[in-house]
Length: 338
Image (cartoon, rainbow, N blue to C red; front, side, top):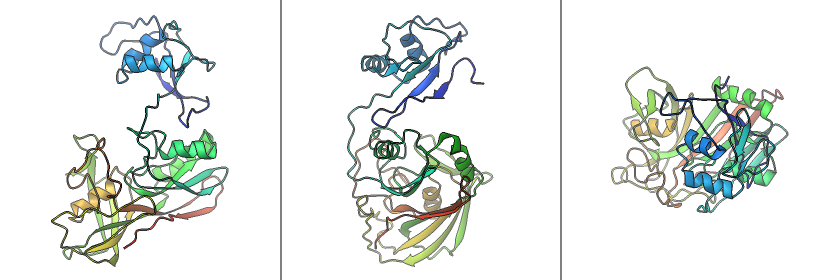
């Protein structure tokens, strides 16, 4: 049950790779700021009241651009009367956005699964100022698959493997692999080497969201995150790293400039937000190029320097396909060079 109103998945075609959202108009409902029953005379009134994060001006623009539709997929206007117990579809309006100077590469595709190599700086799904440039929108347009959906996600700053489901009815089976920890994921990273640590090691901690919405942090308590860390190779102190067309040289902080670097393999057992970055930072070996940990050097909406990529790669993923029963193993074609 979804209560008096809910968002649902729409079967309407995408526009510029962007899917619609669908909302059910309730027969009656309480307003968001009182116990009084809502009284919406138009669909516009309802949308403004129910989604206050979207300004009335933005809703007006969506109506004007034909981006708000009735159940039949026909555009409606701001003056369209409110009709209880019906469905409304709407598209997100796509403003001008900065263009990312690189593309993702499809490594594998069948009727069930798409596997892509995502470059640094590219979000998996539309977020912030990147909509058309997101991996999902790019692949929907390139492959012509409106039903494509990510099975998991990696940070926008991280490069490497992303799995996407083709068929809506199969998504939960693939999602269950990650929920039940039946996927082996290996990452590679460049970070300072420390003589004070004995490798291989396992880092366990309790990670929760930080007061700053885009960060997470370690706190005292029962661990909910776990990462196995090992050193693959010691590197020179001055390391030049590139990731195909997607990366640049790592940033060097003064406190780490005299330390040699190392190539690490990171194996997450759990999948908390920024887990690998937080665990490496907590050990005193923050990943090269990290703009958030140990300190915020650039906010999420600030101009980016594509020459300074986070030196973290989702390098390998393996699992038993829940649909076909096949043993799957994929490796990124991107490489850390040193």
